[in-house]
Image 1: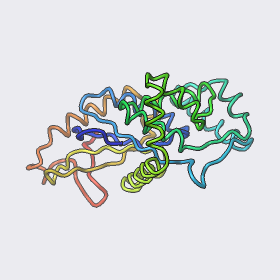
Image 2: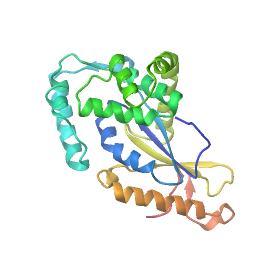
Image 3: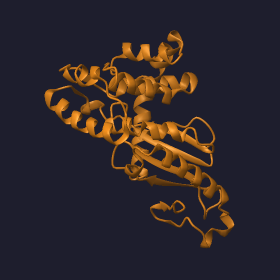
Length: 252
């Protein structure tokens, strides 16, 4: 979601609140927000919406537990007993990405706290085993990050329905534009080195950074410096090179 003029580098984060591997990527997104010159823009893609909503079943529990255990091993992200032995045993519990996405939009509209709301949702789901498709739970989470309940209720109502659907459609357009294969997808937007005044976007390979927050943060800082140092007038023989699929970032 765009909230201000683009920084030197914009990290586009395409995700879903109910996506386990997006939870795996959460430390990387948090670290990116701490790097000067990086602006994070989020895009919630509606993984479990419309015809793709579902409920918890025994098969679903078996599938996600294997994935979640791998995430924990790779990244150190915590998963609570209330999640593994509570929520995942709550057969019939709804898994609908639309309400938490609406809550993200409401938090962003109120106070620019969409990512703070996402963090609260992920903790509620994966640690505390709560139903984050339940608007009542989402309202409590909004209060937990300091949002006024009455103001949140109004913002949630305003962002419900068409506004949420429009955001999801826009997010899916971003996913297609950067040739992402699913959630999460990360892409960097930066000044085009060969076309002054234009921007370039490059999808990032996420797997190599999971569990390496320090290395990721250092790499982002280096890219900020390298992109800032590029002179568009000299781009004809400079890195990064550009082609039909975008511009390559400077080499690591």
